Length: 370
Image (cartoon, rainbow, N blue to C red; front, side, top):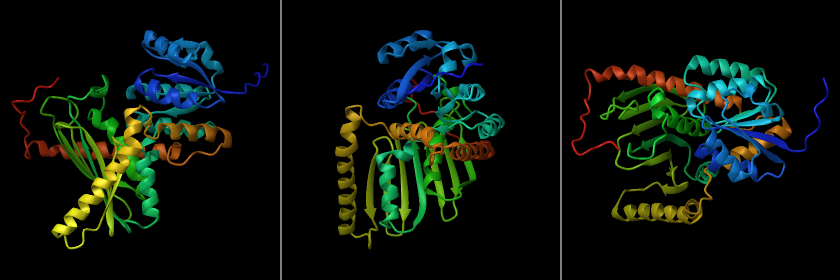
């Protein structure tokens, strides 16, 4: 068989032509001069064509198997942004074709599928990465720098609060997942907590069914343990507003990470909790948010806030050059976070026994699901 001709650029195929691909992945790859945008695959051919036209990409396909796409044979790397239920099949097929892979989370919908995928990827010599993008946001990087400088003292706990409104724009596929949208969005907070907390593991969980008859629970709580402190996660899926926050507590103060706005605020220990201390705390919180607004808010308004996805793709491409798995997004990290996700879902399933004897959530009369 003839030796393939040397190609100076990394040829990348994009599988899944939705918003994440169009707004995050393709622009981040496009800024690299040594990358060639080779093709777009989507179950909706017209959508694939529209994205290809926008970025000048030569090839499109609506096939669901890369083996049946002729131009895929010449691709070096694949970016997978399809709905979660198809991640497993696309990843396995691309591994069979010996491609470097960057995939959105989660890896699969079941533990068995995920473990089979992890084992197969472990046998490959190609680069395999998972998009744990929020680890590389400005707020998260600042938090790690402040912790390293001992600004908040030794970390004593993490508190994660996820407020979601069912009125928000929701993906069409979320109700197909175990525990609905929680299964997809919980991964963000598991990899974030894992990046701050040594030896993280799930302790217990509890969930309450949706008032609206949806797969996503109305309320869910999880407790995880690290070597040094607990991590508490709380979801309210029927909130009037959407807010994602992570609070890192230390002996000298705390850090509040506003995930949606990529803002961090430092609040020092409030001493005797007097009126003066209250205003001091307010000053720190207000100053932190205004500083964050000028750094991240303007980028958000102008579409330049990428929430770390650009850094993930930079690191993925660098790993192809060095052959070294990048920190926080390589197979080892992706496997650990996927297993935490499976453990969390198992804990929530066990916690559903409270439905029969615990709190019964009634549907609010004024609430109408759009």
